[in-house]
Length: 294
Image 1 (cartoon, rainbow, N blue to C red):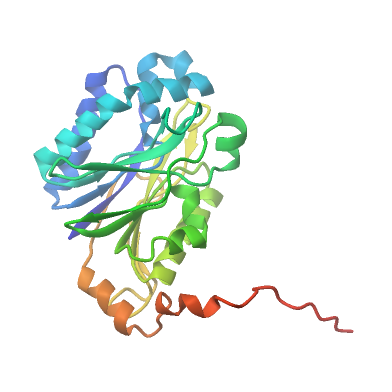
Image 2: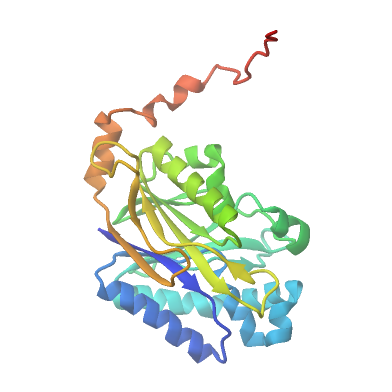
C-alpha cells in the first residue's frame, strides 16, 4: 500500500466552502499520487473555529465549542471524500463535546473507510496545556481497527510517548500518530516516541504534523513539524528506521510504500524480536538498587 502523511497548515477560513475546497484539494492530491491511507494531524480541525469569526477563534473556550459544532458537517465531508476517492482517511483531530463522556470536550480523531464505515479514537493522556488551560479530558479507551489495509491503531500526539499505550497496540500493523507541537522540542518528543513504538512493536508508524503560524488562535498559534513514516531498524527496513520524511515546516504530503509482509517477517525472524520479548520484563520490579561508591 501507499501511505500519505500530512504536514498541514491551518488557515483562516472565510466560508465553509473554502474549507470544503481545501480538504478536497488535499485528498485529491494524495489520492492522485496513489495513496491508499491519508493521515491528517492532531488539532488540524481548529481552523474550523475561524468560521465563527476571529474573536471566537482567539477565545480558548469559544474555539472549542465552535469547532465541536462543525464536526458533524466535517465528518460528512470526510466520509464523502473517502468514498469518492477510494481511500482511508484519518481526519485531523478535533475537540468534541460528547455527552456520553461528560461536560468537557475530548480530543477525537475520526477514521473513515472508503466503504462508508467510520470509527474514532480519543486521546488518552492530556498535555499540561490541554488539562490546565483548555479543560480537554481523556475520552474512550484505545481500540484497533481491522481494515483492508491491515490492523490500524491510533495514538494521538502525547499518547505516543507512553510505552504501555503503545504496547496496547501490539497487534497493529500500522500505528497512526497525528501530532500538533508548538516547538522543535515537542516535535522531537513525539517523533522519538513514534519511532520507539515502531521499535518495540516491530510495526510501521505514521506521524503527521500541523505546521505554520496561526495568529487567530491562542491554542495553535505556532506549529513545528513534518510528516514521517517509520519502521523498526531491522530486516527489510531502513537501518535508520526512517522510511520517509518530509522537510521541516514545509506544507504538503510525505509518501511511503508499506508492505505488510515485511512487518510479518521482521516479527517472525528479525535480528531482534522486541515484540515477542516484551514479556521478559514481567516479574522484574524495574527498580535499580542504589549502591554507594567512594
